[in-house]
Image (tube, rainbow, N blue to C red):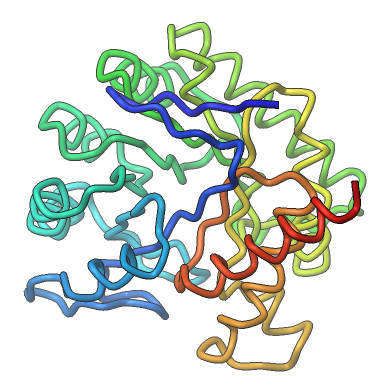
Length: 283
């Protein structure tokens, strides 16, 4: 089955699963490549693309547990240089990872992002927040990633209830986006691994979420890179999680994920090739 992701004036063929590479430009991150007040490390971004990234996802506010929130003003100041540079130097689509309405509007109105990766609260989508974002995405013709979000201190549910809650959250967000005129072909769904689901559930979502969300009719993104669930499963520190991330990427691809979001694309590129070979030889 041919799957296409429509973003601005581009169409991404998702028949071949794609790799979204993470470029953190926040100093408050376990995988950051910049310091407060300094230019982002553009050499790192170039390396990500050279190592197999199909999409570059740029974020300037950490979403890790315990991270200090930043204002949209601070976020925009951090993003201005790297987004401007990326649009003129990077050939692959540029995704903006943000929860701030003002930041998203700014990036879209200045044509600095092709995709909005919305990591904001999604328990109950609102007209005042989500509606404004969907209008901006619709008007720009941008791509949109909708994520199921829970607070990090949320009650951990049994897996089946957790999965049902994710489906309901994404159904609600998807329907509102469609009601605001966002093209369904522009939308990708993310179950929100690492966002208040519980570490055991996070591990299971890597394998089960793609098929559980299939009936919603949108491609699925799995964002599992360097997540605590991998660290706990293996007893490894964060800096040792790139190889386990790639193994999990292979599982996600085999189970039907269209996109994985990772810190080191080269290893997930190999994982994609292995997953493809396994699936082809199983037919």
